[in-house]
Length: 237
Ligand code: SAH
Image (cartoon, rainbow, N blue to C red; front, top):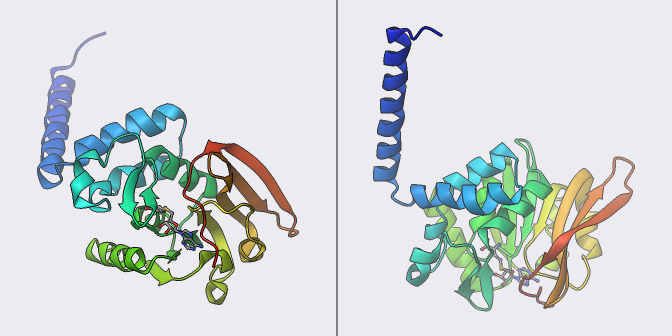
């Protein structure tokens, strides 16, 4: 094969441009490198394939959702405590649940258990609108503040008991439950649109299953397990 000097020049110019772009991104956002590595090693490597989900995980500044004292650990492969008995889930689990609920551009998504607001921020980049409910007033308030400061204008945070859902805004195309009930509340299944998907950890602490529920076009409900997980229990009012 003949090597055209013109092609070589174009290739060198492309590499230089890519390096320049990477330098600019890293300079503006020093955590970007850690985030790219997190997505490659913890998420894509474990089988999350949806490119939109991977893009949203690369774009969301997880370190700004965790308490200042654990900022240096924000991109590690485990959950972190948020105080008030809450934890921000392991990055892989956030990606897995996001892929399972399959948010799309026109979708309205409900989240139960706002915590830090991180999962809501990831969903907000993939759906039209996110409604999220948190039972601890302090967490609801601080997550709403973080989301506002970071410019996520399509997320609405409400303080209250998520087991009842958000009937005024139902039906939802997707529901993501991030605190574990012993069984998925009927009110949440009722607020799922036909064709919608709900993902929830279900069961006792130490023995929970991540359950995916799909509501068919005819209203029938189909359920399957995505494997074992460990979430904080859903509080009962
Ligand atoms: N999705 C969060 C992590 C959630 S941890 C994030 O991305 O950071 C689980 C959260 O569910 C905790 O904040 C806990 O306070 C909340 N929670 C527990 N029971 C609840 C209930 N009945 N209604 C709403 N929120 C609840």
